[in-house]
Image (cartoon, rainbow, N blue to C red):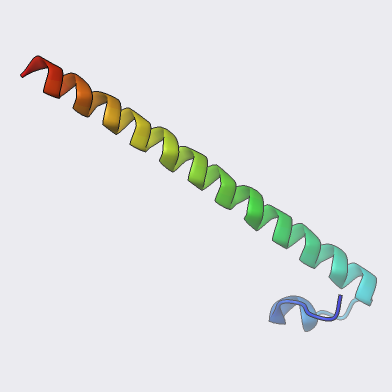
Length: 58
């Protein structure tokens, strides 16, 4: 990998080790973002359900 985050690039490690760290970081970020999106979708769904219940009660 020729492009690393600045902090990874500055490490005194082999390119293979830096590549591994960068892949790990990228995957971790991707999984975290997916979890945030799923959580937001669940919250929005719950808010919509509650809104529909309130509208039905009025």
